[in-house]
Length: 545
Image 1 (spheres, rainbow, N blue to C red):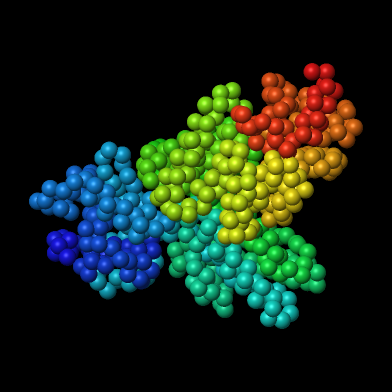
Image 2 (image 1 turned 135 degrees about the vertical axis):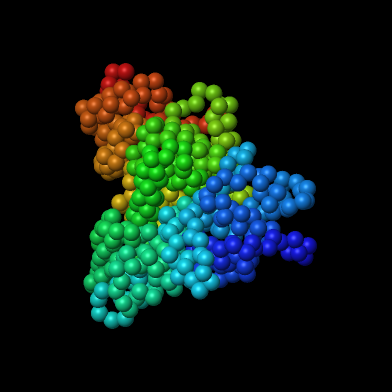
């Protein structure tokens, strides 16, 4: 009550409203609307928001905000932090529009439209505001074929793609609700018109054709600013009797194709802005750049170093950016499970402790944070908690059955436990969902390991060669190929492959290579990797080393 009594009155010359993104702040009524729906917000938080919007994107120091929002009252600085946190919660995926300037204050980074006339304060006013950068609308898929069942199947695909795409995008990504997209079901609309009216930057459209025993999916990603087609694809799948399983495969392939392209497209925008104004990006900009570098199909050390630098910049602007925290954590895990072996067990443990801290911070800020939970699976594997990792992975898979990362983690943990047949099944499921995924080489390498353990050496050679085609820079895959070739009796090819590996890694121990995850200190012999190690030793002997 007292908080409301002390609320600041609107100056006589203040605007009637501010429009930003999907939000509209009616100044005199002191109401914040999100797409026409009132957002619950305390009066002090509204006062802070008004000051930020009126600043025109300029820095507002903490002292200035305290003086203006609590005039004539001495209050602790944490009162301001509480109101900033409340505002960020209200903004949801757009919380980074309130940027923290460390040690100084805050500034509002989103484009703001000032509305002076009461008659213009309508839903259309904030519709005209600039669309969020990473925003997309999935148009209803067209069902091709005879009968209503084909359109029902297409509608089910559209719903699932919308849901899973929203989960796959980083924080700040916005996927229009399906009820909004359904308005375009009965009349064609130009992508640019959709972008203007729905404030989205990208539009996804597609069709599904079911003919006897096969399904064909066509897909386009369109820039709503220009109407240009950024990417298109077509793929065919066998039509099995399990409709839900078929739907999962289609949805998985579509989402895994679109999400990284959306991230890269927006990262390109952020990169251009960074070149024009170095150091002027937001926490969201730097996080997108970090994930773009992290998710490249064949990551080199410089890509991962660049990703860490971007995530660090994001955290310098917003220490509570959960996606950036999760990114730092995943890089730390990656350094252990895919990097060079650690000579010092303490250094390895410290790297994993850093990852654990980052994931816990992200989950505290955003309970159930998907990227932090995914990173936690790799952390469990790196610590040798294979059974726990399998349990956690299956729990996550119930939420997102098309997530190839989880299928891969299940396969790798099962390999460690000597369960190669089960592991092979999970790797092949990953490939069904992610056949066009840039990171495909990772589970193909796992598939090659599993086949080698099972004595299916020729099949292992094929899988490992495909993995190398996807990422020729990952030296360990050349060693595994050498092992498979040696076990298959192809001595000359094995000798050539192990030579390629040794040029890149002259000192790596074979025991280190035999496990999917670098051997843990004091872990002792593990069930998986015994036949791989035998093949590596044969290949090494062939080279005369």
